[in-house]
Image 1 (spheres, rainbow, N blue to C red):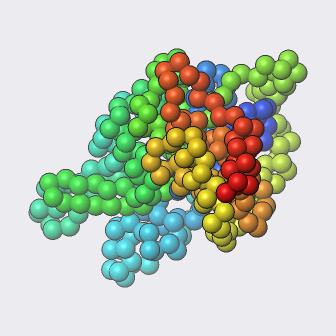
Image 2: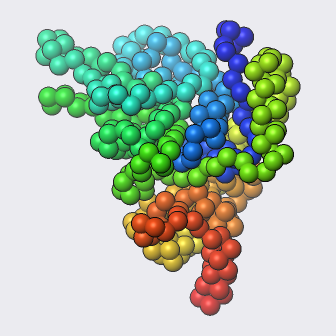
Image 3: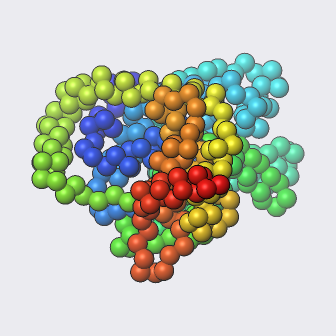
Length: 348
């Protein structure tokens, strides 16, 4: 089946854009970070990176014929349909499926995103009948929203709520239904076409600003690789297979490693101190700093989370949450931040 799939440009072959690639990988290692918003002009490999990420990730084991793509064996987080089938004595089967990129069209309605309940069927039979939406298809996969700044605010809220909780709730006429919605959320946008409200920006775990390569040799390499891929996709992908497999194994190890990481008070204190120093509102930034630091430590093979891990991910977590005037750039000076933290903890 895999040999029939259209070749996808390899993740490891993308030239530059290191921050974007790092943010995507951190969200794969720890989806509870809450997704990543990628801002940048057209033609900066945003869509290419998202599709390449799905192709990079290993296949998943799911419950056969489950409309919500429930993870095989994880019965504590299974949907009501799987639970009912299992309790009814049906012998459920395990199937392996590839990771997918589920794209959300801008014209989507709330019913299409969240799914719907057949009220007439519920009244007639006393049983819930759920028609799955985009969030059910996205469970376990990557949910990609291009031009997310053009999507209705209430739909963005819906996506971000599901991404944060890992559950989608649907309620119609007093009848409710919930199912797992654990996905990696990726939104992309061109700032020239308008921005998201600050309240929605804050809900995205990480943000990355991408620009076209300015180095002549790097730009030449972008063109060279793309032409090579278009000329012979299979051979190009075969040449990248060893590097792809290496990164895939690193991600699997990082996911396992992160579950064993302990977070010491020093890490929590660092995250809180940074947020207070930069005047960031609420507690979401603190929590995201810690979650991203854990994923970063796991990605780099570390056995503990350190203050340095928090500082490192701060450039992805904080710029879109910092208070600034309308004409002020959302940049974070990590050198200044490191110096301030050193002084702060020495004098504490």
